[in-house]
Length: 270
Image (cartoon, rainbow, N blue to C red):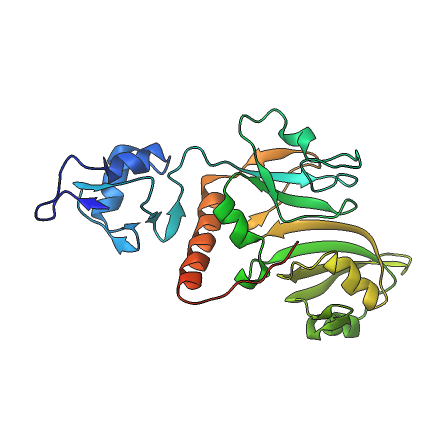
């Protein structure tokens, strides 16, 4: 960051902060100036209140009201409601339906963050931001995912507690961060269960529910971190809103700061 008001600072180096904010779609230049004066803008973790401040959009990190702002116009972020029967791959060697049917008309090349198995539908994030993808795909960063499963049998409160305490699988014990029964079906042959967890083990929700005696009939991922599927129809895709993107970037930057402070990472998969 270059502060034009600093002694010896070059007033022509970098781009004025209010211009950068306006270009990023945060607000008009006039409103951006007001945000700066009010002390609501941070650059590299430091509050900036001088309107003469200039930054390098390629290297400086900007946040408004504590929420990160993406300054790189080349980065793209999409939410897809993946249908059943589609594999989470940009190119399936077996010729099965893959994600290219949703991305082939995009100008930029994107990739999926984590995976959903072919028979699981729901929220999948597509992006060309490798740094963000790295954080979101690793369970050590604590990014939660919420699933709704239709399962066989009547799920009791005891089973819910077991899911939260932990279920022993062949690759170790796993516990849900949260679990609850949404409803029992009228014939008592099926239940609707909501599970939230941050593990990225392969087919983890299906394996957990199978282990407690309630095999999955249908499974959908409703949320991924701060993102929620909402009313996005199956097979539809949209760009993230500024608010959604800001929330994701804030998580990513906090995790990156923790990593540089000495935190390690573990590999995982959704």
